[in-house]
Amino acid sequence: MSRLTPWIFLFAMFLASHSHVCAQTINLSDSLYRVLRHKPVPTAKLDTRNSFITGNSAKVYGIKVGLSFRKTLTIGLGYNWIGTDLTEPVRIGPQVFESEIRMRYIAPFVEYSFYKKGNWEAMVPVQLGFGKSFHRINTQNGDLNTNMGRVILYEPGMSIEYKIFGIVGVGGGFGYRLMLKNNKSIDQQFTSPVYVLRFRLIFDEILKQAKAYQEGKE
Image (tube, rainbow, N blue to C red; front, top):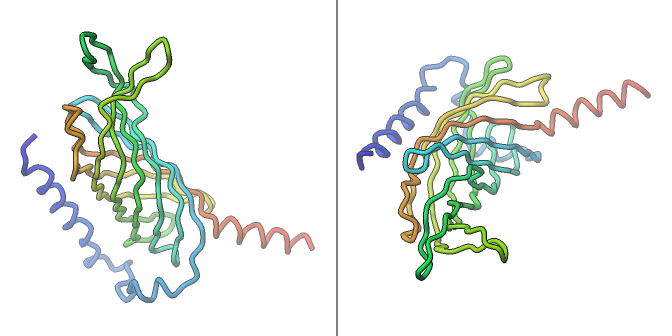
């Protein structure tokens, strides 16, 4: 992969995220200041992201919780981990073991919704991850983690979501995982395109519908 590829991709993402200036359905007067003045509501979602590690498919899972302001800006924190069994040999002393490649990280994230029409919504999610990668070796005495090192990564993206009954959001998107700091003990390429599957519970709408249902019974 060329060293210029990540920057070309990020530039394309920047242009795509700003293409909303030509769309009539976008409220351009919605400044962040006005959005943040609204009372936030809790939100949670599960992510399944398909990426690559040195050309091999690697699935990343994420659990995210946060606060949503006016259904336009979401700020929160997520926990992410590689859920695909990728292996490589690791030498410890005179012995060579087959190890699993692991990476886990915590990532504060921001997600800005720039397009809404009917049940459809488009948004730009960005997260900055801090964590570690390591080799896991299965031994007779249990799991052994070795070659552990810190990683820092940046993940911009773009997602599209469709709302079902106004309470569940499902969708997908694309992005890029750019490693700002690698674990030098693991000779693998973690920088990669990312393809995302989304599932989100819209808590404020759930509470609204539950309240309306309760009032209707009374």
